[in-house]
Length: 384
Image (cartoon, rainbow, N blue to C red):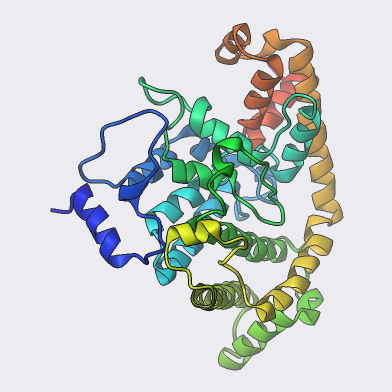
C-alpha cells in the first residue's frame, strides 16, 4: 500500500538533492491533520482542481474572448498545457512533479476576465487603493476568497505553492514584492520550471491560435528561423501533409525543441554552479532553469513577431479596448452604487473596504458573465 509516508520516502530516494520534498514543507497557515494516502503537494493540487476559481478559468480569455470561437485556448486549457510542459521538465530534472503541477494549476487563478486587458483596467482603477496584479490576487484567492472549508478561509495551501503563485515571473508577469516570501531568497527550481513552462505554452499556443484564426498568415512566418527550421523538416518527412496537420506538428516540434534545450541547458547550469541542495538554489542570485543562448536568440524573433502581428493585430486591440471599457464602466457603477452588488458580496461591505470588495467581485468574473452584467447595466432591453 502506497501511503503518504511511503510517498515521502520515495521522494527522498528518487528526486534530486536540490528538489523540494513534500515531507519538508514549511507547512500551512492553519494546522491540519495530514492525509494518509496523499502527500501535502498532491493534496494541494486536488484542492486547486476542485476550487471554483479553477473552474472559472474555462471562460476566461487567453488571447481570444470566449464568444469568438470554441477552438481557441482559454485560460483553463492554457493552464493545463502549462502543467503538462512543467511536469515534463520537472521529471527530467529530478524535481518534485507534484509540487510543479500544483503551482502550474494555480498560477493563473488570480487572472481577471479578458486577460491582460482586464488586469490593466483593474491595475489602473486600484492604483491608489493597494494596486492590482494577478499574482497577488491569486494568493488572495487561495488564502481568503475561496470558501470551501468550515475551519479556515481559502484553500489553506502549503507555503511552497503559495510562494509559486506570488513569485510567478514571465515577460508578461512582473511579481510585486511580498514581505512574507522575500526572506526566502530566489524561487525554487520547481517555481522556475513553471515560469518557463508558462512562456513556452503561451508563445507556441498563441501562435497556433493566431494561425487558426487567420490573424497570422503562414507566409508571414517564413522569415522566422525557428519556424522555418521545423517546417523544412516536416516538409522533408511528410511531403503530402495537410495545412492543418502541418500546423499541429510544427507547434509540437517547436515546443519539443524548446523543452529539450531548456532541460539540457538547466542540467548544464546545475553542474556548472555546483547546485547540490534546495538551499543552494535559494542563495543563487540568478535563475538556473534557462534556455541556452542559442535558443534564446532563436526565440526572440518569434516572440517579437507575436507581439507585432497577433497581440497588436487591430482585431485583438479592438476587443482589448472594448474589454477595458467594460471593466472600467462596471467598476465605476459598483463604486457609485454598491447596493447593486449581489447579497453575497454586499454583506462584505460592513467589514471590508469597498474598493477591495468591488475589485474582488469583478476580478472573479468570467468573460461571458462580465459581458452579461455589463448588458444588464447599460442595455435597456436586457432583463436585470
